[in-house]
Image (cartoon, rainbow, N blue to C red):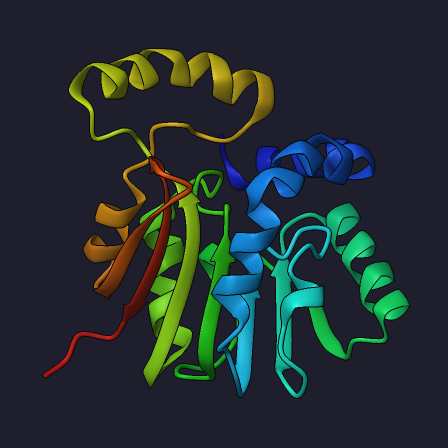
Length: 206
């Protein structure tokens, strides 16, 4: 699925996206978002900001920029930002081709985004490029199971799932983060599942 198709898909479902995701949000994901963002500060970039689900969790004083490839998702994020009286620069942009200068942000945030980016390593290299030398990249992602049998099942099912709902269910995102040149600082399994991960990464240390 190329970038234009990803944009079309999210434009198509933007009106119902929050409703579709609400069961998981109520169950556990909203708590994970809050925990992930509780310590960010300074200049923060959120890639794939979508409808703005994370907006409410950013600490006061955060200088937030958010990007998304879908105009209709971004419209909803802008409305949410206005209703919450949150100041944020929200821009239409592809994570694979960001226009920000090198080393612009203290933190880069991504929550359940790199399952849908067509070329995840290219996007992750851009994350590294725009992050300051002492910055951190924060991720919440679902990944391919480490269990041999379940991983194979996810591989088999992935084309059908991707065709029906869009995201890939078998991405090795932790490996992709490393392959993009970032250094893993910590990885945590969320909710007792090895499929849901919280990852903190930074630039490689000298």
